[in-house]
Length: 275
Image 1 (cartoon, rainbow, N blue to C red):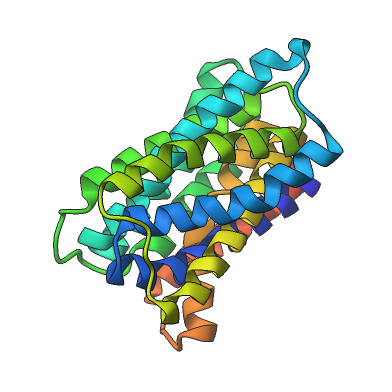
Image 2 (image 1 turned 45 degrees about the vertical axis):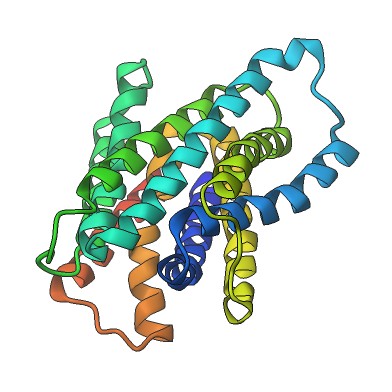
């Protein structure tokens, strides 16, 4: 039950962060917002992790290496997601990125994770619901599709690294975020800088704080396991995006999105019953 709760809270944090990031990205560029997001997270999480956990010991090098690799994947995944939203149709990009839950479920099952029939049905409902809620209608363009596919695959790599890492969740988050910043900083400074207009800075900073909350909850979820449940619940940002748009932006979800929400709620309820 705790795995499901933290996973869904992670998805909510990510959906809210994306809502803030969208405007900043379109008025600046993806790499600029990427730098603000990972920079805010690093400034907050690294001092806390060093104070509470210190540096990883020699016996933790493997876990630290996996966390560092997750940071590289995370940089690529977030950049591809923002780039896809910048150039392509939102519904198409969201639907394709949400398939990361399916990619992860298949990956861990192939790696030997036991799955019962009821659990498999719940996972399928959650994945199907995530896709339905992300679809906003017929895409005007497919330009964002390659970026979305790449983001989904890279996010799967992130989750696999977190799942098989052997260090605590706080150290994982600090190491991966530091590596993401180490890649993003020179890339942004060498290609146009990191300037964000003053009026957009609260959104940029808020997106960074919320994205860090999502990352921390993601690592906690995978530390609790099992990875099939963790992977599907943490990728329900499409469902939360529909709710946020309905409540805060006065958007009206399409019938397929309401159907997706119903599938997701049913799937999560099954997960709570069997996990």
